[in-house]
Image 1 (cartoon, rainbow, N blue to C red):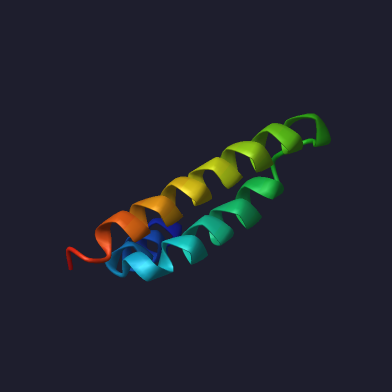
Image 2: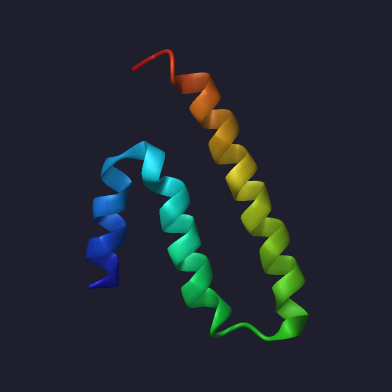
Length: 61
């Protein structure tokens, strides 16, 4: 079910951020506080990479 939702969200590149937010909420349940800081940093890096990718490719669509 979760995989289906993620695949649907992948269809529209503008909704990838929502997919990250959903994954963030799921992963939050399994993380302890020691890993939380590392996860937030990597999550933020992925978000920045997505935004830069969107800026680079939005003129190609």
